[in-house]
Length: 208
Ligand code: B1M
Image (cartoon, rainbow, N blue to C red; front, side):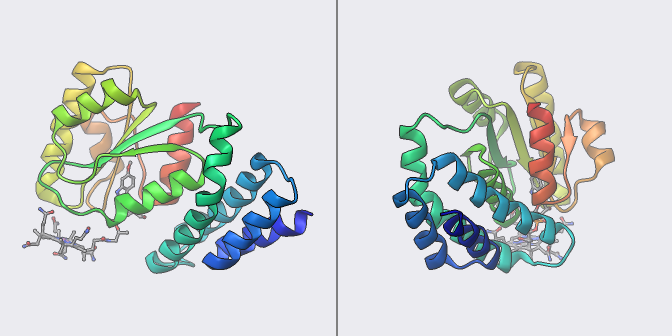
């Protein structure tokens, strides 16, 4: 019976969409618990994240793995919701005002979903007020900000400042190519992550 779970993990690692869906269906049909199927899926995505971090995989391969994960999630999600196994933690994410880059942000989202976070994606070009309103509405554990341009780093700083002033309880993590640990500390963010796999580890730490 656990053969289908092993095949699910392998299908995610290899980015095989049809295999991921078939193995998920087989596991659920065989009566395996939705939690065990979720664990197999997460194991696959964790491995992808680690290999991406180690530069053994590149963006296109991660995207392919994430699509395989999505095929599995399509079947699993309604069952998880029906059985009350909902994500324990949530992340509100967006690319800061003035910045339209979203490929990196979307990778972070996929990895977070693979680690069973609920993700609320605000999209790109998001001003401070929109983050504040969404925090009121969704009450996330963590807010994640992405910026790809040196010219939008000041917008990231203003957003962090605004959120620290108005929503002091929420944890803020930042990332994107021009962002550094020093910059994150300087602007008052709670954490910085250089890549999508580290973003998951950081979100887990901030929620602990
Ligand atoms: Co733009 N662009 N771009 N661009 N673009 C860069 C970023 C640039 C470095 C290219 C260059 O000049 N060499 C340069 C920035 C220079 C600078 O500021 N120092 C640049 C520029 C200048 C511009 C425009 C101004 C160009 C123009 O119009 N004159 C313009 C700006 C538009 C705007 O935003 N207002 C622009 C436009 C665009 C496109 C629309 C054409 C397109 C974006 C498409 C899209 O995103 N949907 C685009 C692209 C694709 C790039 C490059 C080529 C690739 C960016 C990317 O997706 N990387 C980029 C050059 C390059 O990097 N080679 C470039 C792959 C992605 C996986 O990496 O986003 O770093 P990255 O994400 C990583 C980590 O940073 C981290 O995890 C991800 C995965 O590991 N991470 C986070 C990211 N966000 C995180 C959030 C977290 C945690 C981790 O939360 C806590």
